[in-house]
Amino acid sequence: MLDTVIFDMDGVICHTNPYHSKAFRAFFAKRNMYPAEAEFAEHMYGKNNSYIFSHFMGRSVTGEELQQFENEKEGLFREIYKPHIEAIHGFVAFAEQLLEQGYKLGVATSAPRANMDLIIDSLGIRHVFDSMLGSEDVSRHKPDPMVYLKSCTNLGASPETCLVFEDSYSGITAAQSAGMKVIGVLSSHGRDELPSCSYYIDQYDTTLLSKVSSL
Image (tube, rainbow, N blue to C red):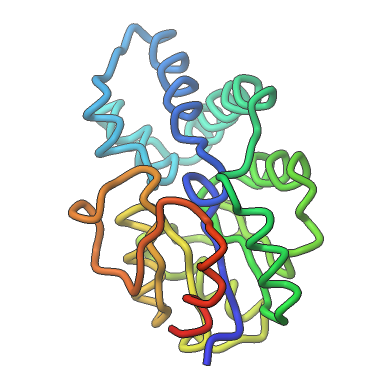
């Protein structure tokens, strides 16, 4: 029986991808680089920054250089996104319903903690989560299952009792590799672009709680 629900953040709690795209475009434009939208969709959404910078720069970006690039780009993202922070329709009410029903809740994102703190606090929902993990909290990133397994430990749960909400191929793969059930959030990709999930949603509606309890 499921007793724990873990959410990715970008594309699951908020529609952040358009703003990440704007931030990356601003970052790369400073370097006279102008990737196409199709390349962003394939190599940015759901990926960690080390992968993204390495792919678009055409070389390995690690260590101090990665930290400098990440600080610059994520600073741009927070500046661009801060006036527009809004949860995906129905998410906040759904999270509150889960909490009232006794589920343990967590966030497991590939984004930096500063992004997570900005979004969670702007939405006023920190109180619903007993675990919040960002990119700094793990040494291996999605599609590796580490962030989900660590979340599971933080929440005192077993993988087989955890349900994950994810919107990306790498995130779904990570959660399933951790032995967890997944609901695919179709905010960034269509069903045909994602691994098979237990269920799919376009938004959080009033019937979702009963669906979760039946999985």
